[in-house]
Image (cartoon, one colour):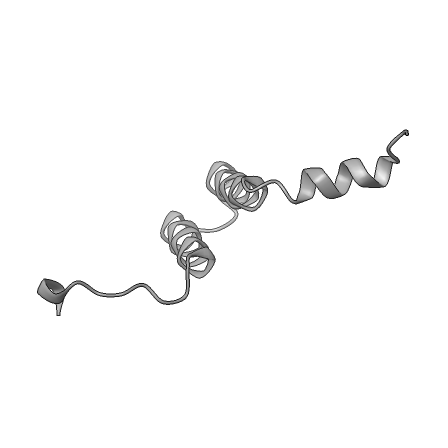
Length: 64
């Protein structure tokens, strides 16, 4: 049975490294072209990474 081309795209888009690679690519693009100042690019990158992480991470007792 032959797979349709739509199945290949869905499998590619569901790869676990797809979203991180997009975020890194956009960050490199913004940094290399200076469309935004460097501090704004860094701020957007870290905001995207934190938003992508798990919602609730338990704090260690020594950190509170």
